[in-house]
Length: 198
Image (cartoon, rainbow, N blue to C red; front, side, top):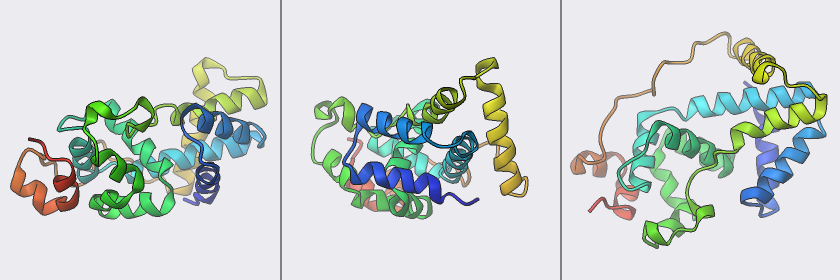
């Protein structure tokens, strides 16, 4: 699926140095100025790239960064946060999650205990998934049935552009635990060193 429009908006928000609510407001405004079909495309692209990051290895990376515990919802928000890191980092991390160790955002976190992280520094972006629906409602004045028609349109576009490939019911790859120290060092050596679970 062609995702350039999504990544262009994410890159533009990063260039402006926006974070937190400022980034959300900028993206919401940028989306709301687009035709409704472009907003639907943004949502479909977001779901596509999030699906690419649905792997056990990335879940393990999130486990390490969060201190050995990462719930379903936390991992979903972590995947969205990875989108906010930009396309080069995101795509490299999908292939090798240990490259997250080189991201400036992750390096800053590793230099301090989790208790010292500010609310805005935590590796999560819960609100990203709600921006396109809000923009669509603002642009069209409609959002019936809790957005069912919006989400159905995004899903139809996603399926049409990915040849109807089915989303796997669970993360790709083999599940493993970061509490297995030897396995963690083997699979994610840099992150294991940066975020020890002791």
